[in-house]
Image 1 (cartoon, rainbow, N blue to C red):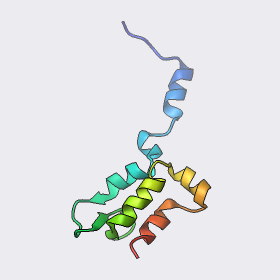
Image 2: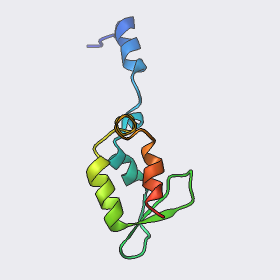
Image 3: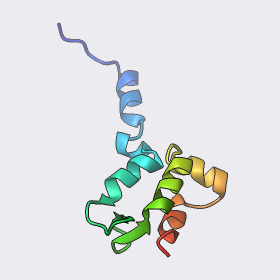
Length: 91
């Protein structure tokens, strides 16, 4: 049995964000994570910066604190883009 969607259902279905547009910070960092890094370091590549490494302890702390947030929630809570703060951990 074939069911057809009404015009309203079709519009609702296509108007939502793509699943990848709504990733948490932790989910995004899993995508960025590189397998190669020195012991005690976490390597990341976000396609905007050259590959960078962060001390593992700093990365874990950031992910524990902010990983469950969505980018917009972080910006609302902290006042800036989470990526700026995360990349700054490499310094």
